[in-house]
Image (cartoon, rainbow, N blue to C red; front, side):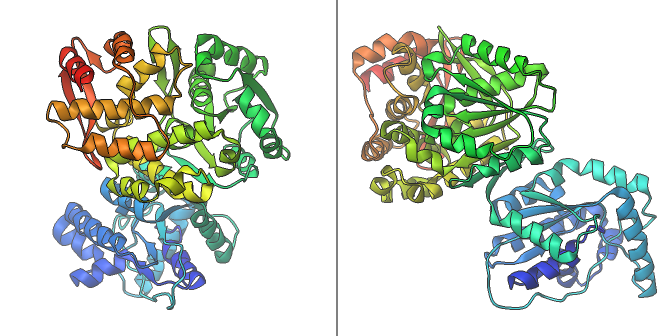
Length: 552
């Protein structure tokens, strides 16, 4: 209440030339009762059911609109996630003092108009579909709600804001409305949020944006300014410096904060404790405080090492991921897995540590070697197999075009892959359930990488081979539909990826499979695709897996 959802929503709708929908008004129209009457007659729990139903139906309609939700609407997790998937979500903020003052004004106005109920409490969220259509904004009356009817005290407002803080943080952007800016200026800020190409990773107050742009290095400095970084410590590698020096120089040309660069040796063979120690040593030499930000500019190795270093430096400093390889863009930069390799296997040491922002700049793909670019497609195929059948169909239909590596061909599939991963991670951050599906192909793939001392196969190539072998094994024991492995193999081949290795190589790689992190005694929790777009984690004995793999 009192943050301007309805006022700004109406102005924004006129500005964009789209209809305006206030879900409070929709509820009152649908039920024939005021919101206060529903609360009094049926209680808040029943009202929330009605509110969620109206919100979900509104979001399911693809008509471009500006939608104003009641302040409590997105306390429903289902509604919140549906809004993030269907719209640009902007949370309007104001101080508790401003909310109290405005609420009292609203109370007096309502009393003067013989309206007995009040708008809902706290911060609101405007949900924007940024498209132009004909038609004026709707001019429905502002419904009023009862949660502060007994008095909009600062304590009551602060309690509600604290209760809802996690839900309000899960948005594409936040706009403060208790400053001296005009309605038009506030609307401009909302439109700026909608204009960005962003996927949200909703994790309460640790929520962050995964932003996709094309050759926009200046955006990195603006992100750091938004984070109020005291200094930026850029971790990169020798390959990135050689290929992307111009981008790095442009990115920090106008930086107000101090910035330092740490350059790792390039390659998976350097994803080890010695490199982590190098990052620690050079970062500490810069005398960072806890407002410093580690900026990982590189592929998966740089992102994993820099992320782990950030998770431990001063017991945790903030992290921005700037992936420069396709594989890192669609997988390793998103979701918070960090770490490094050990002689006994890949990624056996690490932590879960979420970034504060991810900036995917398609300009990096222009200097990526063809083999590296193609390797990243394996992770897109993987997530499509377990979570997004429509993405898999797109890959099959446009494989040759996608393989060219142009950002125009890749942007849509990058966004789809990131969205699918975010939807999985938001429900299972610590990999206790569905997130394990994202390891399809990695049991065999990691073993092949380790067997080759991380020099024979790129990670994506190993995952492509592992995906096909694991699907053949799953078919052999009746867990995957017949023909799925062949279908995956055909697509991966069209994309330019390898799909098999010799039996001798598999035999030699077996000790690394037996040491996999997913092992529990003599069994292994193996993620598989049961059919295109659907996955499961099945429990197999190591002996059964070995037989299926080596005879498949």
